[in-house]
Image 1 (tube, rainbow, N blue to C red):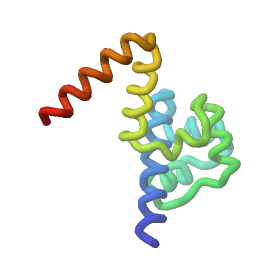
Image 2 (image 1 turned 90 degrees about the horizontal axis):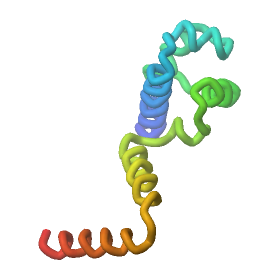
Image 3 (image 1 turned 45 degrees about the vertical axis):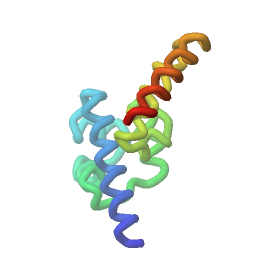
Length: 108
């Protein structure tokens, strides 16, 4: 169970760091925007500390994301990208795509 908590902290910190970098913010700039120290940002991003819920709310605002985005894995993000791409197509094209996938699956 302890390993699960450590994994959650590590993955959460990694995701926060990815979003911070994507937002072109340094740790210091990010900390100032949400009212915590650069050191606390470092602890969170390295998985050594859980952020408070208020901190996550503030981070979601400056990163322009939802709270659940902090807990998505890269695999989840890739699935989400695929889902968004698939939803752009009309049903008749999706039927064709499904047939092609089933055909490939049959021979793999």
